[in-house]
Image (cartoon, rainbow over all chains, first blue to last red; front, side, top):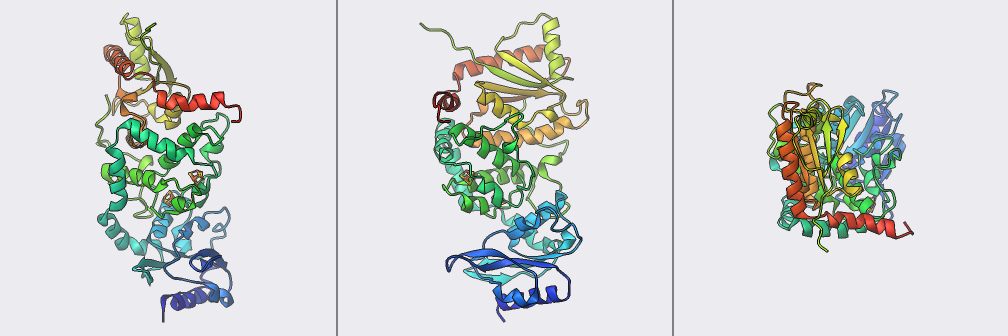
Length: 276
Length: 149
Ligand code: SF4
Ligand code: SF4
């Protein structure tokens, strides 16, 4: 039995037994290679679930809307390792109870979706530990190195050009599981921290703040990068922040549900090389 | 006409240490560059990175963030939290091309009036040598001169 059949059966069993009230998974999208999130509430509908290498979106973002988990019932969700990491972060930040999240885990390897054993986030700890030791993307690091070899003036010009394209659609924010604030700092207008219209200065501020607020929280699912309609390389900013968290504070986002958020904790002997 | 450029520097300081240190510099009649505008806050833990961006947005050429030495925080932990945020935020600014030389961080205690005066002088010299932060300020000018925004 292929993984798609297997997970359809699992989903049907979970729903039938009342173990979960809802399954969040992937269905056919608007083109053959696209998948869209679907929400299945009864075992009769599981035939709509699709699972293959095109299922790349991080569905954990659908767990946080207010009220979904407040009745104490469980929800099953299809997640890749990045999604499992974001469930851990959401749990660590008290946005959900990981006991209510049943994970239908899979990873994509060589164009195929493969099942990952485990049902609750904590059962994936060894997998996440191995991801941490494997390190961050070397491709992104190469690109980040290229930028860091530039002078500050050149780097500013590079980002100025990139950010000048931003239309402040906030798709990058909407898609991110960790951008759950009811009131985002860019929507605050007393005081108005960030210029709201999409001129380059406001875009600069917005993109800096978005990346900063995801420092040590981004799980590199790539959702923001794919969502950006003007192709700003948001992955580079995210990567640079993840690298800082990992190198300086040994923090790999979403390793476990009781991991302290990197910027909400400290060690007395944290390194300080730049403070005069 | 050649006037020497005088940088605008905004200093975000905590009231218990660096502000008191600046006070000491003043009452001890130490002279320091008048380029610095101080903004006093209860703790370095209250100094949001937004403040730094706001200062740049309003035309600062340099920013200083300063508070109590580790272990001396009036609220016990504020500066430890601040230090982590600075570490991350600073690397982000550098990565986006906002020069590290313009954004400074320091620990200055209430007893270090002399350190305060010296630091302000040296930062002012350094930023004067760098010149105005035109790359950033130009972005603001675009907004002010284009009524469509
Ligand atoms: S910042 Fe982007 S890549 Fe990181 S978790 Fe959010 S959507 Fe995914
Ligand atoms: S998705 Fe892209 S264009 Fe939209 S707000 Fe984010 S960075 Fe700007």
